[in-house]
Image 1 (cartoon, rainbow, N blue to C red):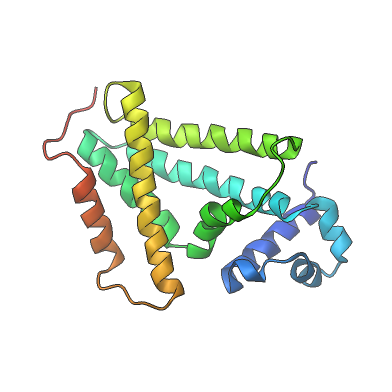
Image 2 (cartoon, helix red, strand yellow):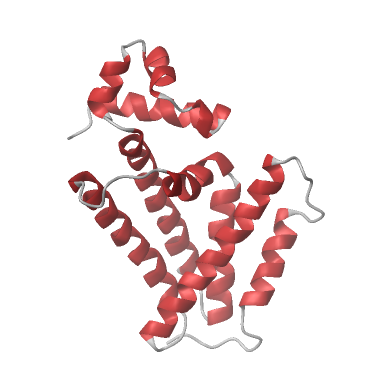
Length: 200
């Protein structure tokens, strides 16, 4: 279904609710109230919460990949590539923890039949986007494409873990003993080879 102005308005309201009140604030009733329409009008465009969230998080995934690709353009060796990738992904997610939670945590809690064609369509899009993300970093890593892809996945997972723990600390109001930049630097130091490998 192609979105109209109403469909886009719904997504904008959902983003605002997410930013202002977290995932719990994003409901069809709250969206309908701000839209000034009935709940059925919202359900017409996004029949289920997974449909709404997919419409939100697919552009966010695209933006995450774009940030990584842009950061990797100037990388001249493996160390620089990993450092630039980690900094870009960490900055993207740490700048908006509610968005991170919607992208990486909430989808795990929503179930939908694997046979649902809408689910297959969303998954195909997600797979294409993540393939770009891992491919962008893998091109700067191990010459063996299988190893490079595994390394790229591991690096990305490590960054997401850092963001997850930062978000958890924020969520339980447990102040971290180190700033974000220090934690990102420590992660990069652990992930990067001591002797940079030139690219090409």
